[in-house]
Every structure is written in C-alpha cells, then in structure tokens.
Amino acid sequence: MIRLLAFLVVVFALGLGFAWLADRPGDMVVTFNGYQYQVSLMVAAVAVVAIVAAVMIVWWLIKSLWNSPYTISRYFRVRRRDRGYQALSTGMIAAGAGDGALARKKTKEAAKLIRSDQEPLIHLLEAQASLLEGDHEGARQKFESMLDDPEMRLLGLRGLHLEAERLGDRNAARHYAGRAAAVAPQLAWAAESTLEELTARGDWDGALKLVEAQKSTRQIERDAANRRRAVLLTAKAQSLADSDPTAARTAAIEANRLAPDFAPAAVAAAAALFKQNDVRKGSKILETAWRAEPHPEIAELYTHARPGDAVLDRLNRARKLQEMKKNHAESSMTVARAALDAQDLSTARREAEAAIRMDRREGAYLLLADIEEAETGDQGKVRQLLSKAVRAPRDPAWVADGVVSERWAPVSPVTGRLDAFEWRAPMERLGQLIDSRDDAPDASVVAIEAPAKPEKPIDVIDHAAAESESKQADNREDHVTPVTAAAFAAVPEDAEAVEPAEELARLPDDPGVDPDDEAEKSPRRFRLF
Image (cartoon, rainbow, N blue to C red; front, top):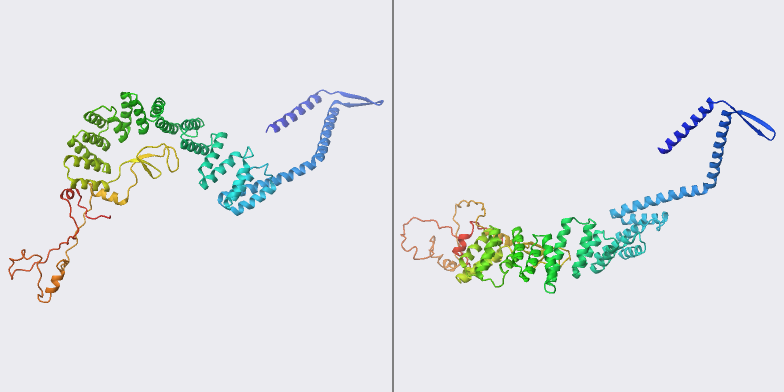
C-alpha cells in the first residue's frame, strides 16, 4: 500500500512538472564540437527523462544477469526447504498419531532436505520415532546430544526426565528436573519435580523459595501458593519443635495465618505457644480451627492445654468446645472422653450415645464399650458393643494414596506428592457398610408380602427324631408322632385333626438373638454377608 502511494505521488509530481514547463515556453541551446543544437524546453525535459529511464533499465538487466546464478540456486534451495518442512510437518503429525513407520520415513526425508543444525526439530522427530519403535536407548542418546545445544537443552532435559520416570529412577528424574528448573524456573514440570525432591530431603526453606518463585511467575494461583506455603511451614515447625522452639513458633503461626482452617497448622501453632506458656493465644487459634472443622487432635490439645488442670477442668473445656460446634459427633465424643476421665459416667454415656446417633462409626462404639465396662462391668454388653465397632465404618484418618496414617505428614510416602494427606474416612469393605446399615433405627424397609399358604402342608423334619419315626412307621400307619408327649396327653381320640404349624427348625449351633440387640434392629431379615 505504501509503495502504491509513493508511485502515485511520483507520477503526480512528474505531471505537475511537465504542466509547469508547458505553461512556460522556451528554448534550450547546446553547443557541442562547433555545432549548436537548439530544442524546446519540453523536448529537452522528455529527452532527459527518457535517458534516465533507459539507464535504469540497462542497469537492471545487467544486475539481473549478474545475479542470475544466485537467484536460480536460491529458488531451488527454497523449494528444497519447503519440501523438507512439509516432510517434517507430516512426520510430526505421524509421531503424534503413533505411526512410527511413517514418522521414521519422514525423518529421513526431512534430514536429506534440511540440515539438522538449521532446524532442531529434526532431532525431536528422530527421538519421537525411536520411542515409537521401542528404541529407548537411541532416544536417550538423541536427548543427551540435545544438551550441547543451548536452544535444545531444555527439550533434552525434558526427554531424559520422562525416560527416567518411565524406568522408575526417581533420583535421575529429579536431577534432570533440577537442572531444568535452574535454567528456566517457569517450567511447571521441572518445578514440581524439584519441589518433590526438596520435600523428600526435608529442605523446607528451599521448597518455600521454589513455591514463591512459582507464585511470582504465575505458575500457580495465589490460593494454591498460600496452601502450599502453609503445608511447608507446618512441616518446618514440626521438624524444629524440639531443636529451635522459637523458629518453630514463627513458622507455625505464619502457616496458621495463611490457612486458619488447616488443622495441623493450628495444632502446631498452639503447641508451640503452649510450650511458651501463652495459653490464651494458643486457645484462640484452636477455637478458630474448631469452628471451621472439628478435629480430634484439636480437641485433645485444647482440653490438655494446661497440664496441671483437674479432670473437671478438662471436662469444662470440652463442653466449651461443644458449645462452639453443637450437634456434631466429634463434639459429643470429646465431652464423652473428658467425662469418662472425670468418672461422670452418666454424662459420658449420654454423649457417646448422641455421637452414635449422629455418626455411627467405630470409635463411638469403642468409647461406649469403655464406658459400659467402667460403669457396669457387664462383659456381655461390652462384647456386643465391640462386635458393633467391628462392623461399623472406620473413624476418619489421614489418608494419602491408599495409605492410612494416624498422624499428618506433608508428603505422600508412596508418590512423594506435597499435601497429599486428607482427613477422611478410609475405604470400607462392602460387608461392613451393609452390616452398619442394619443397625440404623430409621432405615426404610420395603415390605415384602408373605407367600400364600400352600395347599399341601410342608413337613418339617426333626433330625433328632428321624430315627425313631422310621422305626414306628411300620406299626403306626397314618399316625402323627407328637413332638412332646406331655403336650398332647390330654387330646381325645375323636378330636378334630389340626394341620401342623409351619415353624422353621433352629439349628443346634444358633446362639439366638440378644433381646436388647433385637430391639435395636430393624425389621429387615435379609443380609448379603
């Protein structure tokens, strides 16, 4: 567009110039070699313009002829390069689609048409083709050769990192990720692997710096960065709790500030404050975390905040927690435990039963069994409660990658992932879930109509009397042997025959049902397990 405007401006200027000369007639006289030439000014101007144009055309022709070899070679070189890039593009698409044969074919074709030092993608295509063909050793060699090229170094480190993970060599994978993170900290895969390495070594300060770098480069959001920093600071506080209490307190308070509802951070901060006799501030931290989500570790530390307190003082502190979070199973269990320690067994039983009504789980039945043993000593009822605890769902615990832990840990022991532990109930067996539903008092039961009475009564065979009946069968035809003689002694001979009642025989090893347990069960009579 600019060239077109420039051309129009030049043409317009020439037109104006010729119009100006046409309005001003005159002659131009040229004396050369004794001769005098006289022409009009317009003719002279046209001649000058023609001569300049002719010179420019001749110069263009000479330049074109002079540069023709280079022009021709450049044409074929561009054509060859276009074919090479076309082959490279087709090869990359084939590698992405998993066509190893086509990828290898296009790799060779692209290598012939394009120099590998001019196009680094050829090395990547060769490595991908080797991986598709199963030649992992060749792919690793190609990735290692990329380390010498500054432009391809990160790509080579990425390939070596993936190969190390495929072989299960986590140390090598973290080494390559660390080298990549040192060169380019904005790489998410390198930062994550390096973070796992730092946390595995217990280098919490290095991990905190890396998380801060991730936040500054906007690899992770602000909330995620604060969560990670809270986890790392909590782990740091736990590791320094005995060696450096001051540093542990600072780290724990900072972690609690970043995540006030994170129970391990609140427990670590409160424990550090309690060690320095700052009970008021530590209690406030625990109360805030308890309001967000009740946790047994919070309750345990809160009720034992002052080691010299009497059992009644601990019971009062437990009731204070219950007032903060009413109608919660954990609140009732906290009061029940404190009441059991204080020998207030009626309160302990009432709160334990309330916890069972709100959340039927193993710990509530075990606590009620302890209360039963302390109050009555009835071993039968204690065993009954223990059997219910076995069938009940398990209590919540710290779970990460299938591992159940009683204590929180910053990383998973299986994968090394940061902040992997979650407070939840472990996975249950199907039988336990079904048995636990049988004890639910409000469970909806589908009514099943009894089948119609068959026309012919069903004979119930008593295995104990089978032998005696077989001996008397020949002498007493059409005579029913009574089950007990005393029951039918007074029946007259001419009495009307009565059909036998349909009663299922009880197995000899059936212990029966406890009357107390039978009252709690629902009308359901069918179980899968």
